[in-house]
Image (tube, rainbow, N blue to C red; front, side, top):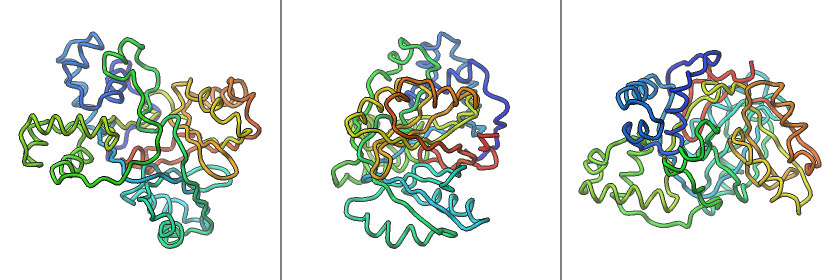
Length: 330
C-alpha cells in the first residue's frame, strides 16, 4: 500500500463491497465476487483491478511464524514516529501504530518459540528513541486483524464467499519444517496474495494442481491467511482506537464474546499484564466511539478501560502503509 488515499473520501458502495469480499477471500476470482455481489463481472473486475493497482487495497498472505506479543513503547520526545517505523520494518511485525495517551506506540510482533528472552532483552531495547517498554504475550484471540470483516456484506454473501467459519484461536503453530516448495509458495503469497496458481507453480517448481493443493493445505493449517488490507477510513470508519480492558478473571471469556459481536471490532485478544484484553475498534465518528465505550453490552462487565486513539498506522496485517495517509483520528 504505497499510494496516499484521502481518508476524508471513503470508497463508494460498490467498491466497499468488493473490498469486503476480498477481506473474506483474497484469492476469489472477479467472476465469483461478481456472482456473489450480483454485479456485472466486467464492472467488478475493472473496479477491483483499480483498487489493487492504486494501492487502496493490498491483498497479501500473512504468514504465521511462532507466537505473538504486544509491544507498548514510550519514547523520547520527537522520536515516536521513528520508533513506530522501526517496529513496522521488522519482518515479524503484524501491526505498528502511533497512539494518543500513556503509550506512544504499540506493535504486535511474532516471536519464534524460545526467542522471547532475546526479543525482550536485546532486540526491543535497540529500537530508536525507546525509553520504556512493556511486552505482553498474547494468550488467545477472539478475533485477529487479518480476520476482520466490517459487516458490509450480508450473511448469505459472506457464506457464499466461504467466510462462515472462523480460524482457530490459538496464538502459535507447532514448529514444523515445511518443504521447499511450500516455503516458496508462502513467500510468493506474502508478496502478492492474488498470485495465480500458474505463477505459484512456476516459483515453486511444481504442477499447477500441486500448487493449488499446497495453498489450500497451508491455509487450512493456519500457516497463511490471505486477506485484503485497507485503511478503515476508506470504508467510512475514520476513527480507530485501541482499548486495554480489565475485568474479573471469570468474565474474560464473556467480555471477549460480547466485544466481537460488533463487526467494527477489528481485533480482540487475551494478553498477559495488568489488563486482560486488548481490543482494536473502528467507528464512523468519535460520538459513535463514545457510545461503544459507554453503552455497549460488554461495558457492564468491565472493571476499567484505557482507550487510545490511533493517530498513525505504519503497518496493518503485515503490510507496510504510508503513514501520511493514516491520520485516522483527525
